[in-house]
Length: 291
Image 1: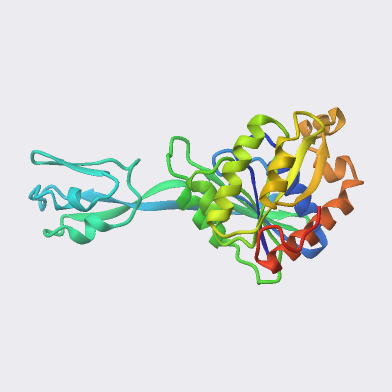
Image 2: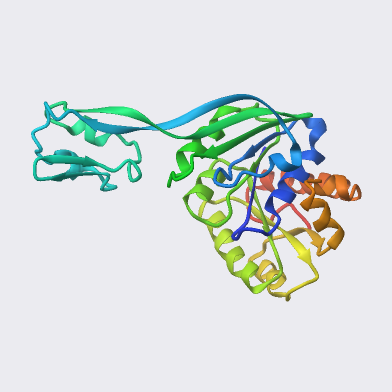
């Protein structure tokens, strides 16, 4: 059972919900994967003991000038313009390279070989009964997708286990990669015009990927009714509401998870897990769950 906790915008409380869901399922030894590799912060709430690290890189081309004839074939086949021929010189731009290997395979002179370009690090450990993994993207690296892809494949449990993926915010490629392969998407939003705008985008992405989606409204009680009206119109169930609370905010600022700061939320998150499991079983957006 794979749940991706996502949000159209940052700062909605996505990690708050994801970590609380994991803690509510601790007796089932869930897997928690922090896929927000550009700003991983779930460790601040779960305090895992990191036991293993592994570097992740992609293969990028390196040109042997003694063999290269500057024919330009490599530049022709590169869909990402990561390799360019200027006169007799071949220039490689690692920041644009996706590691597809087309230039290496297509070079008629065999003048190109691949070298590994470090993108980031994966870390694995335990937070009590939770199996914890996170990725840390190297500063300045423009592409998070290869690191997220490797992270998802690193600690693969059996089909019966709970896997909770804490997604990056937004709807760009890293979010798509995080959602792919999930059973259900839990969208965390806030009842404001900005929250509604980005919720629309995230819900549309889940729909395109044919994934059932549900919503948690955080900071409930502020803003307007736009989010509620949108969810009702689109048939997306609102499974939980977390009110705007100074006490909750202060606890989170100190790194205390919601279900530990407010133990009354523990059964609510366990109930949330049951609703998500029924949604995943139905295979359709919203069916099998009740707000």
